[in-house]
Length: 194
Ligand code: AMP
Image (cartoon, rainbow, N blue to C red; front, side, top):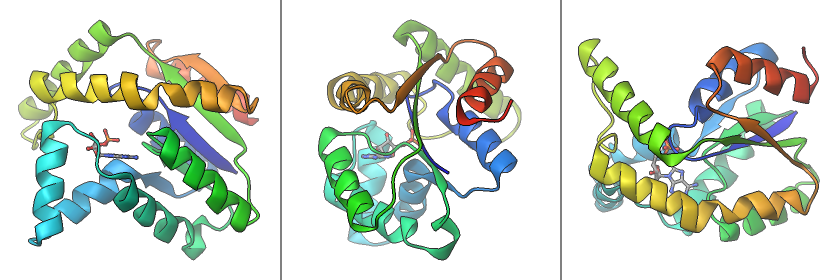
């Protein structure tokens, strides 16, 4: 089963993706995680990535697409995956469609987690506070300035994907602000478990 999760930062894509991959034994393909790993490298690209991500801006389509193509073609993703954080631009979606066509595979579900901006701002700030209290490192982009840039990037560059997938009749939307367990049950119902 091949699933794409869409939604603004803080809508719960990461949390829900983890639950789906655990239940279905699928690989979790998070472009944010892939890029954070690449940003740790002490190379010119690594440093540039660090800065772009800390600012809350989107990384270039070219780089992200290359990372996704490489990952999706690994053996563990052959029978399915949960994509979290990709595609994030129409250009990524178009290239991704070409890849799916070339590899003769198709997406089964594109699920949008809807959430409103003010609530997201609070959610992410709470996430940062709880992480600090637990003695763990806070994401460098979980601060009000970077979050504003991330939300703007979502509404300008990623929100058009909702229509892109809606006209392809593959999109389903869920209220991402419900308790996380309710969101999970809705997802499981949609994908045939529940
Ligand atoms: P996330 O963990 O999904 O919130 O992603 C964290 C950061 O990684 C984003 O703010 C972007 O800088 C970068 N990123 C993740 N996925 C993409 C993508 N598909 N396209 C461009 N940048 C991305």
